[in-house]
Length: 331
Length: 194
Image 1 (cartoon, chains in turn green, purple):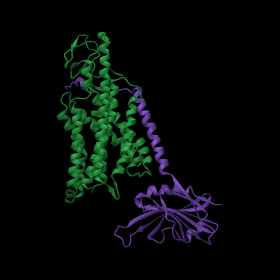
Image 2 (cartoon, rainbow over the protein chains, first blue to last red):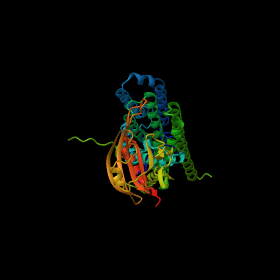
Image 3 (cartoon, helix red, strand yellow):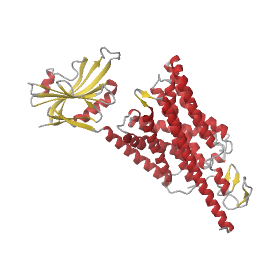
């Protein structure tokens, strides 16, 4: 494994000073954006740039607000427009979650800003992988988009093992063999940022397929479906990204990332079943419950990831504290 | 030609597959194959029932409404009310199924609008000589407001103990590929009491 990004293996042994506390940093140095950090402030910084979590919050809020607006006015708009116009608007709405993520990030992530070309590439790569691998397997081979399981158990089991695993793997591939290998991947939270972008790319491709399958869809329910998918896949991309961020900056067992791919897959399967339970109505899809459920799902999953990240940082801090105490002879 | 240097931070390390990657890929492949098998098993479960001396099967979840003579089994799909499996039984003097078909033995759907036989092919069902017939008709939804639907079906007919048995799976033309494979699967499960 290459030396973790953020550390400079070729750095000269001279003493630097932490950009935050200004104390001398000897031995192992950490750098972010060319600035030196001590162990403690490096751990704090890698919780995520100041903009990461507000950006995630803003994205969820923005998508939910958009869906609410469309639930209120979408039906009236649909009546005025032809099917072609509705399909065109639907395609535009499919792209919106990804665009919103990029725009919000551009605005909020200023401390250690990620290159937007990377975020855009991750988004596009997620969509491309979904189009070339994910959807041919999900729709072409397994016919999952029309499948009706007998019970909750079959729904969770099959969606987890097929759709869930494939989509989590696509996020993994998109991040692992591109941005993960660059020095830009220099914070634990970067995995979440890029995983979310890849998840949104997958959601975009799924939603484009959905719009093209349903040319005359109602914009209220159609937009809600699009946003529900985006919220879920963004959150699940964040889970896989969390695993990648951890292994890049911490030593873990070889199966550690596979565990997070599995967690994302199980959440995908559970979401698919719960969504169908919450939204099922006699002849189709209920918009409001779907939206509330997907919004809550995204908040809970990202909240869980945020909590795990804090725990990891706390452990790093306590290790750094123990190291300092040992070095200074404190007991 | 001028070249542009790639900024250091955008430089890609040489990609390689670590043990961790191999575990993820291996896990994903095994899980996907397992999921495929589970789904296949779920979708192929059947209910078997014995009617008129013959054991027939229809997909689990389909509802058997029985039927009026000569229909003894009419199982309708839980996903699509136009897709169903039908078994009819009627007495016949004809000992040979090929001759029976050639002389116009009654067939499933033959009383429907625009009924047409598209292909006939000799075969066997549980070791008994049979004829496979692909057919189509128009379900015009008389009295309703629905657009007429083309129904396609695959029927298997055989004669046993002086009875003409016809087993068919039919459904909307748009689902023909699935209907055909379902018919082929279900006919393989027919057990004719010898």
